[in-house]
Image (cartoon, rainbow, N blue to C red; front, side, top):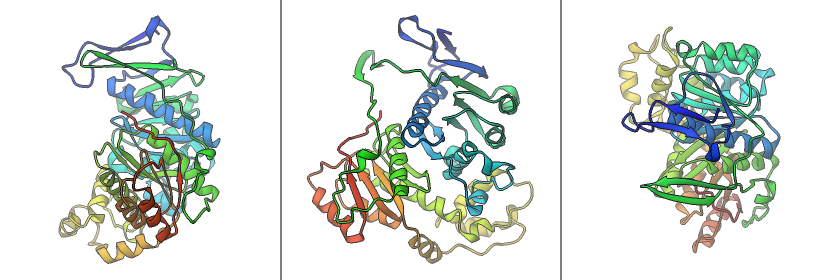
Length: 393
């Protein structure tokens, strides 16, 4: 297939639209089901690069949940704790522990479930039955992977009344070194960002604390690769083999950190006993549960949820107080944080610490690097200067 006609571009008025390769080359994909759109393909090709790079960097299978050309999360296939299984709504999935790929997607989807509603999925490895079983019951636009087992393909083809978008990509495809795009009729050309993110990138530790355990190295690599495919400015928190909070597309770095930190906090709080114990009525679907949980955790919406508890719960649950949340979050440690460009002020470090950050990777190069380093030293945070900016637009 040398080109694929799209229904329209970013918006319904933008047509005709298509994807194709320069020089009439064959596209490195097969459309196994559905008819992906313009934004679907943007998500698919960006997310595939992300999971492919994580797999190459860490030797672990990876999954990503993408929305509007930024990841909501990316994860490797570590097994989930019982609490995390329940928080991710996968505690009833048979064979989950035996499928690292299913664990990776359960983590990626479960990180920011509000943002992942209607996601595009990328898998680094052949999709198996267990992974497809998780995907089948979630609201999702489509998937890209290097292959699918027969059972997995049959399950996925049954989604959305048979219209679910399923893309198979050639895992050996390597794009040209130079890439182009047009804006306002003007062509931009640049060398493709094929910068390799690996362990050596974290060797320049500039803080008094020089200790980076292997778990932190893994999480920082996941965070940095995630940022490479996140709309800038961007900041990413990671823990336990997954991105747990992505702040994308903000003009101010502190707003990136606040947004990502808030998402990381919600991920942690979803595993609080009070949240896991919410007595939902039978028949309340996953999207509605996600919405209610998010509002229950929120200071702004909690009282409204509890005042109208009969709509959601078998009985009125106790509130999760501000003090309880702070106490719970204060017990969180060992979180990794990465930024796609330098931190210009130490307010980012102060906010990151509130979300459990103990390990940081950023390019360095600010005139206030010394202030940022001093703030890290105040908390015993280990910070590496990577020397490489990771803007993505």
